[in-house]
Length: 166
Image 1 (cartoon, helix red, strand yellow):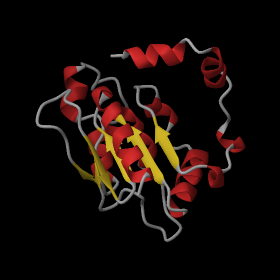
Image 2 (cartoon, helix red, strand yellow; image 1 turned 90 degrees about the vertical axis):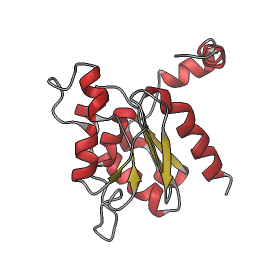
Image 3 (tube, one colour; image 1 turned 45 degrees about the horizontal axis):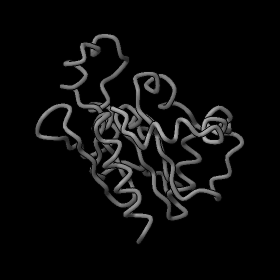
């Protein structure tokens, strides 16, 4: 649910122009960034997992001491990020993303190519989730910051800001 501050930003022409002219991954220099954020939504399930350009940007940001973050289905962007040493970024790290239960409650589990929770586990993540579906839940493990569902965007942002202040 959008808050009043969100609407303030959406009414700023400069901000909206920037949203309408985002760079392609091939135009991004990872050296210029301290954080990458994988937004959620069901569409990213098809867009993120095999996107090598985003994986390379993420690896470079992370290996330069930066933060890799996601919320909800955006965690699909984390599945195949491989570090220079050959390890998967999420291997052995506490992570979260849209839960199997939430996917079933949304009645979309039969339409998606995979369940985010299952894939995070399959790719080495130590999956955690809120006590109840749809509750805000976010966590950080060694500069990997993830949020479970749409309600978790704010908590992810708070963890990112806290990490940047270290």
